Image 1 (cartoon, rainbow over the protein chains, first blue to last red):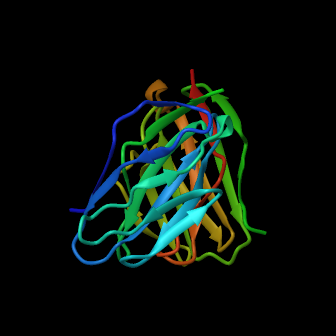
Image 2: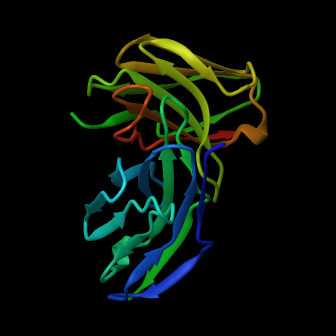
Amino acid sequence: GNSVTQMEGPVTLSEEAFLTINCTYTATGYPSLFWYVQYPGEGLQLLLKATKADDKGSNKGFEATYRKETTSFHLEKGSVQVSDSAVYFCALIQGAQKLVFGQGTRLTINP
Amino acid sequence: DTEVTQTPKHLVMGMTNKKSLKCEQHMGHRAMYWYKQKAKKPPELMFVYSYEKLSINESVPSRFSPECPNSSLLNLHLHALQPEDSALYLCASSQDQTGTYGYTFGSGTRLTVV
């Protein structure tokens, strides 16, 4: 079945550091890929998405590129802020099947 | 309106109580979902409604009973819950069940069973 593997956290960075959170997936065919963010005490927010190979999703300074050849969708941001502290979930969906989440990566940004 | 609204935000209930969680969206989405999320874990799917019909039940105990009165509303009726059912309950919606463009999640109901 389909699956998503994220880098284990927690990840702690200083403000203005470069961020990468790795995500790889296993799926037959061409799933849609997503990054969701969950701030403390809140629900999930869709951060960005990509629906086909080589698509780049971007939002709020975050980017991720759908790489079919490496089955990856790594999340990057050039300069993180304290307000980016949250849990980040990589996810995929294919057809009318359910949304499959990675285990989540907790990110803490120190001032 | 681009939101999914869940009420209440917090709920404390006894094991003999009956309560309901409510979810509402006005984006014209035709698929709606209930998820359960325990601390430090990803959300787990409970139920899927597609065009107001239950299409997926992930073997959820019968003490959880979903209802979709119309295309904008989704309820989750709770009865005789156990302490281990304490969790964050999230509602979500998508344009259709393919979910190709992503789900919109509500902010959740934090449920504590005492």
